[in-house]
Image 1 (cartoon, rainbow, N blue to C red):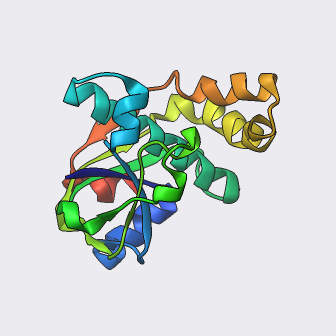
Image 2: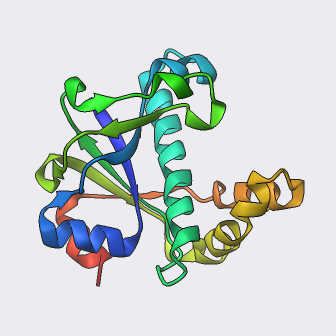
Image 3: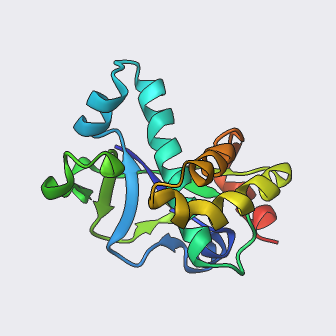
Length: 168
């Protein structure tokens, strides 16, 4: 099963140094039944792109909590056995939780399929989005517009072997 783990660049550097994504439990995003129903598509690639988008917002939340991290969203796509993925049935109907999963164990970085990172030209919009996230969560429409502006930037795809270049 493909899952998308939100990180920051410092978090990616820690995972690279440790050789694993963790510690557990680890928040991630995947194509869940709730995400499939919300997105209303049978196209697996579209659904995975939606899960990647949810993980990118998770990365934005990590950036909002870490003002020292470079303002670039990071998502690591990893393949894990379906049994390694847990969902919270209590949050199944919560739209904010669509696609949310939890990994009960750390995941070796060798299981990563790719790393998705914002380009440098996204940093200004991502910084503004991270700063506006709290107000957007409280219902401020202008702040939500700013947060949505980060979504205008597609994350770039990198092979796992390129991680050392990303964390320099």
